[in-house]
Structures are given as structure tokens and as C-alpha cells.
Image 1 (cartoon, rainbow, N blue to C red):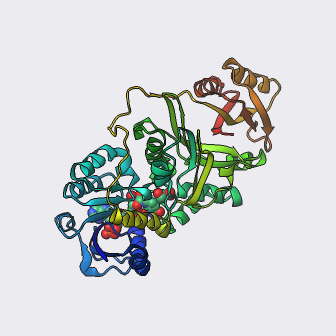
Image 2 (cartoon, rainbow, N blue to C red):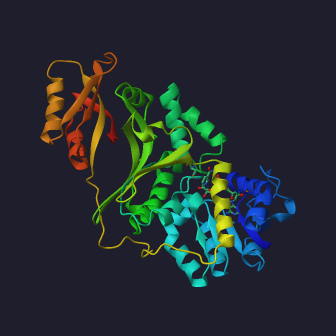
Image 3 (spheres, rainbow, N blue to C red):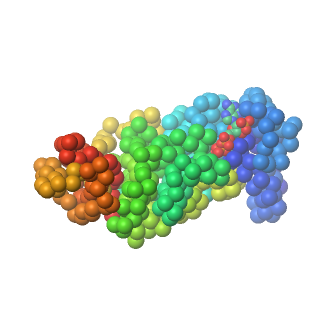
Length: 425
Ligand code: NAP
Ligand code: HSE
């Protein structure tokens, strides 16, 4: 039997789930893996706070050096969240010769190069499966199973909180703020939920996932980010009527050395495989030259699904003879040979409020035409209010900059642009 002594950095939603899963799984660990895993110390902010798991009070500490300086602890498991002090604590642990398992996408996306360098200095492991898509084994899949592929694109629903909110708004026409409160209560949301709804959580994950998919460091700063805070029930209802579902999509495409990485609300047709992914479920749809299309789907957030990925990493780290790291040049910046595209091509959903009189439609069509943006569908929705009527357009594919230029030309005395949402096939 191999005894593995570990320390926790944090014990909130995810830490509590990991504690429970390790307790629940003791017998299997002993029988299947010949492992006895013991948590020796748990770093928290407040030792007097009530916990969701039965961690004994005497294990709790507010002093990280009790974990980092303990020679018996060989694996440090981090689920504190945030960039700092989590990153510095993990680097100290790695330099002290301890393998690190983390669920922290912010720390990995922003400081991956530093973490990996520290791990390689002391020949220990850095495991981060839980940092992207909760229980879905997307990191392991990209690192191992799909290594023989040139991945051309991936598209994912990679934030459980926003998918939960948008699914309920789509199904029941519910109000955004009420549903966000439920997502927080269910432990899906980040300690600061602004990171979820403003798209940053998905952008951190996309930076990690696309780096592995394209075998090149894709810095977080290169990801275009737009969240769901401006999305309205009316947009969702109009899209639904036109055969589309709204999702916060993370999109990464590679064509030679040209790369686009973006996170934004996106309409997809109801028959798209990602359209069926609802609630806190996540999914990643990708295309590799050998594997072709593939979709991985599962629970992307929540204590036990995330614990599933963390404990999987702990087991893997405990039995690995050699710790494997990505082989691309892991630096803070992107490789100079890569070009990041900001004039991507997309279709667009545009909702405007237009003055209800003859000739207005021709003017609007003219502003689109000036930038060579072609209209595919148009719908008039609702009745005249304050002399204005809502009009919805879906365009054919056009360059982003042409679309932005067309909308900038709209004359507010004739119509105002209420929403512009990208549409993927
Ligand atoms: P959480 O419930 O807020 O838990 C954070 C824990 O870290 C708490 O126990 C807190 O101590 C401790 N902590 C925070 N800052 C600390 C500091 N400076 N010093 C000492 N202890 C500190 O957060 P969570 O939802 O478990 O998320 C944790 C991490 O997992 C984040 O990186 C998140 O992105 C990631 N993640 C979360 C999910 C999810 O579904 N929630 C899924 C995948 C990944 P106290 O308890 O004393 O306050
Ligand atoms: N807040 C994150 C989400 C947790 O909603 O997806 C999982 O990373």
C-alpha cells in the first residue's frame, strides 16, 4: 500500500467536494490503486467558519507554510481561486518538491509558464484537469488522446453558470438576475460571479484549452471577451422564434499561423449538437484532421463534478512514474510567428428599433449594403411603441469590421441598434 499525504489550499465548494469524494472512495483507492490518501492540513481564511464537509477543526490552518514546509506532504491541492496568493503558494510548493493539483483556471491561464517552469525545476507534476470544464476530461483528451491531430477549431460551452442562466431564460423566459442568484446558491458561480457573466471565466479556460489544442501558448490577453450581461429576454425570444438558441460560446480556430480566439454570446441553430447542452452542463465540439468531429459533454461546474476531476488528478499524480508537461514553448507571450485575427467572419443577429414610416427599411438595407453586408432574413416583432417598431435581421457571413462599420453608420434619428449578436452555423 502506498501512503500519500496531501495538503489542501482552500476548503469551499470544490474543496468540500474533494474531501467528501476522497472519504467516499477510500475502499476503491485501496483495492484498485493500492493507495491510501490522507489529508494532513487544510489552508483556509477563517478556521471558525462552518464547512460543507466533515474536515476536523484541528486540520485547519491559516498559515500556508505549515503545508509548504511539511516534508511529509507530497501533493498540494489548490482550490482557493483567484490569481494571488494562489499562484505564489503553488510556485512555493512546486519549488519545495511537491506536485500541485489545481482547479484554478485564473492562475493557470495567467501564470502557466511560471508554474510549469517551477514544476520542471524540481521534477514534479502540475495537474489542472479541473480548471477547464469541471468533470469533462478535456485536458487529458487534448494532452494525450488527440495528440495525433491537427485541430482546426473548437467551440465550447465552457461556463456552467452562464449556460444555466441562458437555459432557464430560453426555457421559461425567466429574469436574468433571479436565475443568477440560483446559480450562486448551487455553488456553480465563481467566488466573484462577475467573472462568469462577463465571460472572463470562459476566456481563461479557452486560453488553456486552445493552447493545448493548437500546441502553442495562446495568452489570455489575446482572447476577445464579451459576456452575457447585456443579453435580454427579448433577444432570446426573437432568436427562438427564428430557430436559434443563445449560448455563451468559446470559439478557437486555426488556419496555418492565423488564430482567432473569442468568447461571446452566440446564436446557434436549434439542431446544432451544442444547442442541446443545457443547465450546468458544458460541452466542447472540435474538429481534428484525423479524429474529425467530436463532442465531449458533461457537468462543467459544481462540487462533486469538479471533485471528480481533482481526485482523478490526485490519483494520477500519486501513481505516475514520470510527470508529463506540454512540449510547446510555454512562455508568457505568444510565439511571434502567430497572427491573432480580430476581423473574423460571422453571421449576425441585429435587433433595432426603427421609426415606423415608409423608406426606413430601404435606408437600413442601404447602411448594410454600403459595407457589403448581405441580409439573409428579416422579421418585424411586436407593435409600434413611441413611434418605433422592433426589426430583427440575420445577415449572411461578413467580416466583423464591416459589420461594426455598418452599425456605426445607422442614423439614431431613424433607428437605434438594440442588440448585435453573432451567429454560428
Ligand atoms: P470557494 O467556495 O470560495 O472556496 C475558496 C476556499 O479558499 C475557501 O475555503 C477559502 O477559505 C479559501 N481561501 C480563499 N482565499 C484564501 C486565502 N487568501 N487564504 C487562505 N484561504 C483562502 O470557491 P470554489 O467555488 O470552491 O472555487 C475554488 C476554485 O475552484 C476556483 O479557482 C474556481 O475557479 C475553481 N472551480 C470551481 C468550480 C465550481 O463549480 N465552483 C468548478 C471548477 C473549478 P474560507 O472557507 O475560510 O473562506
Ligand atoms: N464558475 C464556473 C462555471 C465553475 O460556472 O463554469 C467551473 O469552472
